[in-house]
Amino acid sequence: METLWVETASKKYPVHIGKGAAAGLAPFLQEQSISKILIITDEKVATLHLEAVKDILRGSGKPVLDYIVPEGESAKTFDVYYECQSFCLSQSLNRKSAIVALGGGAVGDLAGFVAATFMRGIPFIQVPTTLLAHDSAVGGKVAVNHPLGKNMIGAFHQPEAVFYDLSFLNTLPVREIRSGFAEVIKHSLISDPAFYLWLKQEITDLASISEEQYFTMIKKGIQIKSNIVKHDEKESGIRAYLNFGHTLGHAIEAAMGYGNFTHGEAVLIGMIYALSLSCKEEEFQFDSQEFTRWAEKLGYSTKIPAGLSHKDLLGKMKSDKKSTGDQVTFVLLKEVGAPLLSDIPDVTLLEEMDSCLFHSEEAER
Image (cartoon, rainbow, N blue to C red; front, side, top):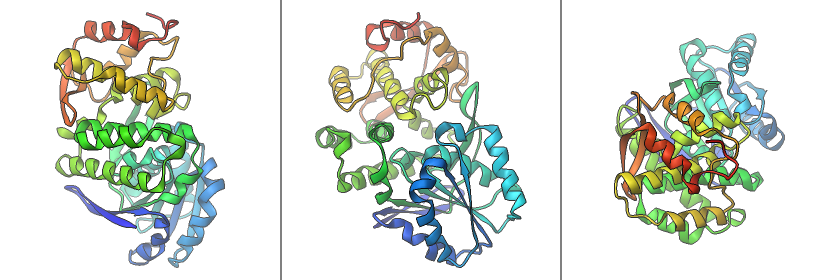
């Protein structure tokens, strides 16, 4: 196991990565002034890992409760958030209680937002069970969704610690690995050309990633994100670079209905779109066709899903929280590892979506 440290303006906390890392939960909590522990997890993770994690947490000597929410983005609704708050109140949690987020990014976002707002903020710990959560578990962004936009209602609330047990990844279906790997690709493109080349050379089949490869990509991704968050905790500047691929990606998720298209698969399409815009707007020298072939070999769809209106997608992009004016603000690349923010005119965005590379033949104009 290896421990990284995330340092922000508001908090410094450890990220423990390795097989069996969850065993460190009990000794960590024994050192904290915690009165009661609530695990928030989803229906699928509960069947796989809840009892094992409860057994570990009982070793801390603290009372352990659990609350099970729907799987995936269905957990990130006002109704589920309200139900979690009601459970916290009914079980007499207080300001010395702590929440453990056991699951993927959706559970982490929900549980973190519950912790951020219950009694104006109580501690929480991230225990990720997916590859995708290597991005969301670090950095303190917590939120729920609104029909008009993803993660629009939320807060910045840093965890006390992250315990990333690689053995949990053994239960992931390939589609979930694919969703998480898109965020790994994102980190490499915005920050580290050598890491990007390593990924292209090493990862050719998402169903056969080794534990060593998981460790390398998760460690590197967390290091990249923590370095950005250290300098910009609340996204007033360079933290926006982490949104590479997310502007169109979030619009696709919203248009498809949250949970009907995975986050990472939508972001991968968004990255291809942003890479093409980068080549045209910033004279970025990049082989987009080679990237697309690699992505398709890994099982990604590289086109906007059929039936989605490009004008509707543009409207959703313009309502994205990352855009601040009439034009959509995009994260583009001048080169691999050199991102920048650029406001792109509507006509350019629509022309790019109308290009043969970015729409299925049946997509609506």
